[in-house]
Length: 394
Image (cartoon, rainbow, N blue to C red; front, side, top):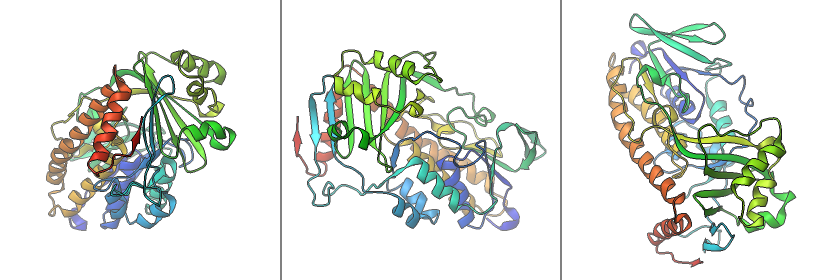
């Protein structure tokens, strides 16, 4: 795409997909502006979990953004130990990597990085002045062949291409699709605590991923790079379920009530959560296979386009791949044909994202079903069997 034929591009939302798009476009000589509602990169205080970026998606996106070295320095070897227990704390499956470096021989390298650190790397890599903080998107209206975008602070900008990368509750999505997010029937509450404060509890979780299943519920635990342990407690609850935001003890009591009868040490994972680390995360999704008729000058990526559950670890990787593929499509488009390139990108990406969403939905229903831990154990064994590995106990 020639410089004179480049559209004025407005990216709405500073998640991984939008930030990858901004960075890769810049590397291809195409300018864009990203508008983010947060006042700064540090506005969000929650700890958040870690991500393992996959080859063929997240890692490719980082490479194309020119940030591979920065990502590698900030990431760590993925903890490949996997523990699955039932609600009584009895281990059903336990995979210990057998490699001398603590890795599973033959497994793909998927270094982990904390979400907040990945975001900062992508922010730092963007051209100076290309991110406008404190800009909360309100609406976009046709203005000739372009779009006039209005923000909550009263400011307006005009763009030829509006890219909605503004999450599951996207305000851009209604411009192209009537699809609504759907509550899955489950809710997750996130908590975190310093592993050094509870060394015996931390030791039970192993060095990788820990999951406990039972009664259509799950407790997941994951180490983060700053020496903390991130907990996700998932349980059936209506969309109306809430927890107090000003009373941590009451909030934890509500969550603990969902896990009555579970092993005391599993309940302790919830009780140990620091007061300022508690966040409610209703599990919502867009219809699996979500797609939309192309509309000139508007598209959506990431959760705005394909919000899926967390049960395949694919959401952020798919979002980053979408940012990469859209940037490549725009860069390769013949002069004046950028909108055709966007339409072709949408068709390709919806297929890829739809497959990931279907797998995620299947994993969620199995994990939170009647035989959750058995399904989980079988899935882990299938993955390892492809590598010729069978070192399991439980």
